[in-house]
Length: 145
Image 1 (cartoon, rainbow, N blue to C red):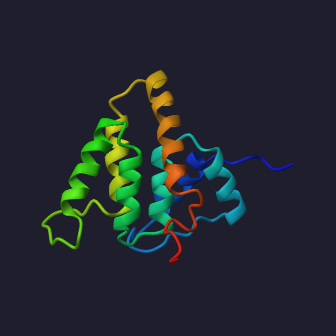
Image 2: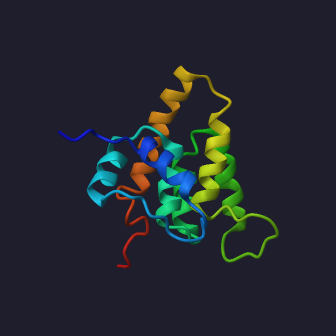
């Protein structure tokens, strides 16, 4: 009998052993396990961390879509606004918001201000919003038409 692994648990194992977040990370589990954990997850920071682990490169379009989809949450509304002003290859000083790791850090920090019942409800809504934009974590970029 196999124990069902949560995405939170999987990412808690991956994060400490990750050395270079500019490269794809070894998850240490098969795709089926990760996909099942993704679909069952209600932990939006773990979901964004998984995307960062799998796809460390700049993802302007997808990150903007994610921030926009989660814009019912004020910190993500602000992030979507910042992204809309930085789009189109604009050169900037400082961190670029168009990386999944940046979104993960922003969301994780924003959720720390909430107590558990409210954080759980908000987490479920945010996770659903993430899955609308990225139904499959292994292919976050829509295929070319």
